[in-house]
Amino acid sequence: MKLKACLITILIFLTQSCSVSITSLLSNAPPGQAIIQSSDGSFSAIMGLQEAFGLLQNNETLYVSSGKVELTSSLLVSNLNNIKIIGNNTALVALLDIPVVQFRNVTNVQLSNILVVHEIGEWCSQNCIEFYDASDLIIRDVKFDGSGYFGLSLVRVTNAIIENNEFYNCTYGLSSWDGANLKVSNNKFYNNRKADIMESDPGQFLNDYTKDNTFERKL
Image 1 (cartoon, helix red, strand yellow):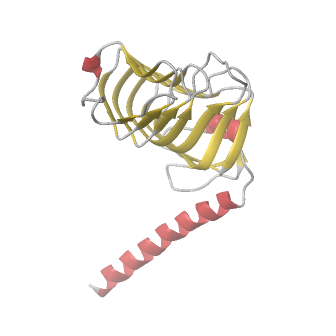
Image 2 (cartoon, rainbow, N blue to C red; image 1 turned 90 degrees about the horizontal axis):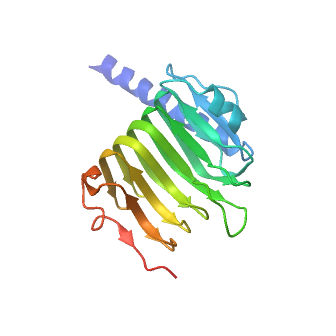
């Protein structure tokens, strides 16, 4: 029993050490930097965000440093399974009329702790985050400051949990076409110009999103 307790203590210490290490590394990194944790638990060197998105592989986690990241080209994730993208008070800011982040043909994706916004003036025609042909998503604690068209656009997405997010300054906050098994709950929608949620079929949703979210009157 003593040996077992000792091994558990060592395991907890190692786990906490890894957590402290990644937190410490990112706290000292300038905005726009990232670290990838591989499937074996090891960490990459600090690198630029565009490079990190290009190197991300299956079963990996991408941690993004805090602060404002200015983008002049979209971030793209395609044909990957079981990935996490985790920010730390991170703002992804598009300086051009472009989709900020696009996901195509992905499964088992988690996205959290990121603000996504366009900063190009009063009008833009692109979306903050787009998913195409995706399944098994968790989108949590993300702020979609649209200032363009859609905050979050889902096309042929199945099995998604979208919770504890904020959608504001969008033309449309959240949209979904040809999806299934979507749970949208505990989100805040406010100051969106046309509609908070647009959908091709209410049967896509597992819950009554009109009751399970907060909708504030537009200014």
